Image 1: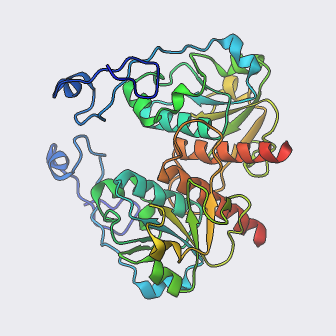
Image 2: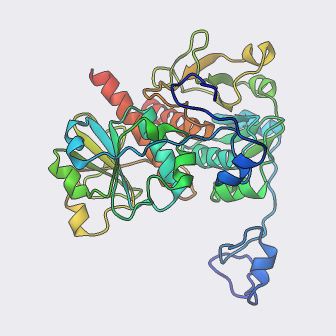
Length: 196
Length: 196
């Protein structure tokens, strides 16, 4: 029972134990048990800017979104109903620990975020009414960046206050949702730095 | 033998054939055979700006780098010796087709790129001598963005004309190399748009 720079109790395991307990075939040599932190909708109000992962089904993409949002200084990530569970083991792994440093709000709708006082910024790979390149949009203030499935119908689309696009110079398909989130999060960070 | 919008010959396969031929368990319902395009070092000289994937071992990361570079309008991607093979099947899949739209130069050193007239821009997660945040650096002109292993020793580091960093606001680890490449490529695209 050594302590590795924390107050947590640590145990050295016999050969083979980790391999049986972990969910991957060749696990990292360290494993931890942590309490799941649950953020309630009320806590949203004190957030400055957030990312909404809207109906993201791929765990790797959601993990990368956590990582980008955290690295860019977002105050939280909201998962709408239909998004893969935040504590899915693949999400946790691909978040590379970042999800333990940023509040995660599960099962919250875009409507609830708007009611908490956020301006809703929709990202789209296609032109939308009044959409602007992300570098020309104003991304300061209390904003929520929606990534993932674009607004599905009028109900969702009506909630969007501003549409942004990432101009694409190439001939291939659009960026995937994790890459798009990364690019936009760092533009938000840049604009907010300059605004302060 | 139908033709699906191309002049390529197409074949409908019997049930089960695709599953045996493809390298994934549940392949996409279409497969193509394409000639591998090889770009020679001499073609580098006509490139405007490029990305150097330096000793990238993860196929998914390299595929994403192709995708970002192509989407941001880069003229090519250089793979240094030690980078995973460009036509590794995992690289091809994760590039989502983008690598067929951008010249790929394999087995070329940073030194050779510099000799082809490029200014070498090193990306680093740590402060380097004279490094600047990527949004404050000048990323126009004939530049080569190096992503991946940071310069390993004095030989490589001496080749770098300008170091850039991606400021990190969070508490977790730095971005992975694919995310960093995506963010920087779109900043290059943005600066070049404004310069024109």
